[in-house]
Length: 191
Image (cartoon, rainbow, N blue to C red; front, side):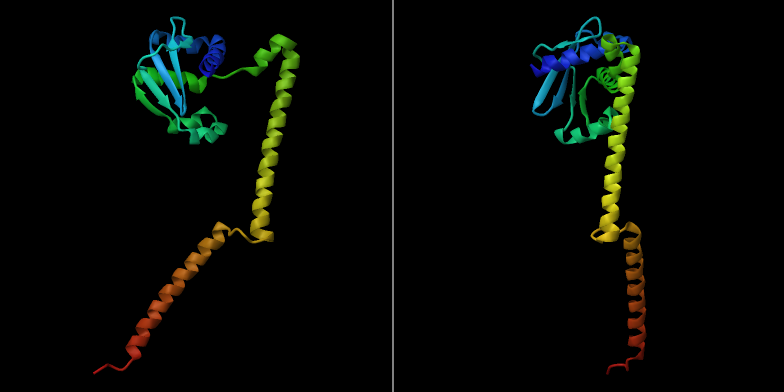
């Protein structure tokens, strides 16, 4: 069920992206496996460049993403690319990676079919403003907490102060070593 939902969603995005279907067409009949343990989704590619549910059998390419990498998705699909393990056909993997990275849902276009262009544009602009405001608010809260814990309630140490402490400790160590050498020179020789 999850597999068919994912495939329907991807095909909905592919419907508005002829460039992506064109990129996938040469791989008609090939199979891919998207793995996010414990979930594995088998994809096939049809003659029009859409995804189908893959029949059982070995996939031509397997793309595996560790579940611990999901928080990186907030940075966009490109942020995940370094964590994906790819095995199998390199050309198919390249095409799938390109399509999945660049495929975007145009919410404004989809909403315009229901409400009209002007209202859709304003609704999406309002949603973007709200998301930007929330991001900025979260950044401000984090900055304020960091300042509070480093200035008001010094629980955190600023990097500059820590580096200064390190330099002072190294200078003190060197001074102590020089003092020990001088003291050894002043000691009377032992017999």
